[in-house]
Image 1 (cartoon, one colour):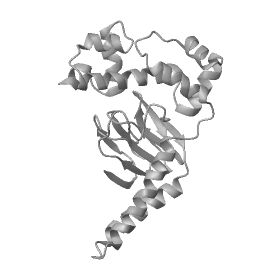
Image 2 (spheres, rainbow, N blue to C red; image 1 turned 90 degrees about the vertical axis):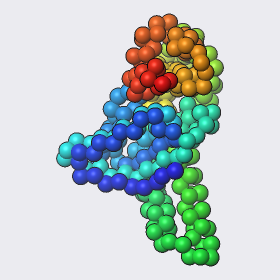
Image 3 (cartoon, helix red, strand yellow; image 1 turned 60 degrees about the horizontal axis):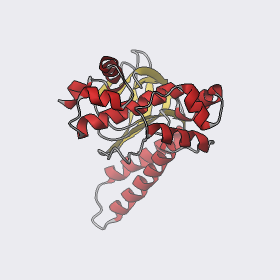
Image 4 (cartoon, rainbow, N blue to C red; image 1 turned 45 degrees about the horizontal axis):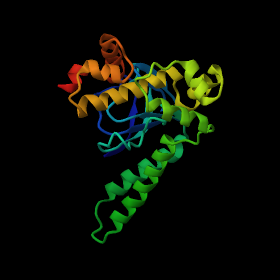
Length: 246
């Protein structure tokens, strides 16, 4: 939907609620902060940040903190097949030069204006295809352990179950500590954080696609106490379940 690059000398403050499509940024200079999973995390040089659809999109930097980054935002996506999905990392290392060069190339192609002979459309298609290739590479990094993916598929299919880290580690056939390290490395989250992420995403889908009560949805994603569910949902999704449904 949108692509560009942004440079700020400081005091940046961008807030988007409930964005419809995936969002990816890659920092090339300085640093800033991005709201990820309900807490502010630093985004530095050669670091990509991935925000799935329907999550808060909040970016900020302090008054004297310069921050420059390139970014891409996708159109509204199906919750079943988003670019940034349940096994994408929240952050990862990615060299800024190729991403920035492709963004700048696409922008320059647009600025050239129409040629009247189809050459601009062909040029735009090439830049867009390359940019999409980078976005998919960021959202689908090579993951070293199939056991982790298999475990999360099983957990994601039964989010009402009272999962704990020991049980998840047993399914993955590894120790709790190894599971924790692997999740942090490949997903940018601890196992418990990623479990919450999956539950909040499922809850959001149920809130907008069903007439189930909030209490029923709370139970369906593993929360016995609807009040605890509502507080967690507000922290991760930026609003309470009742507000989102309205």
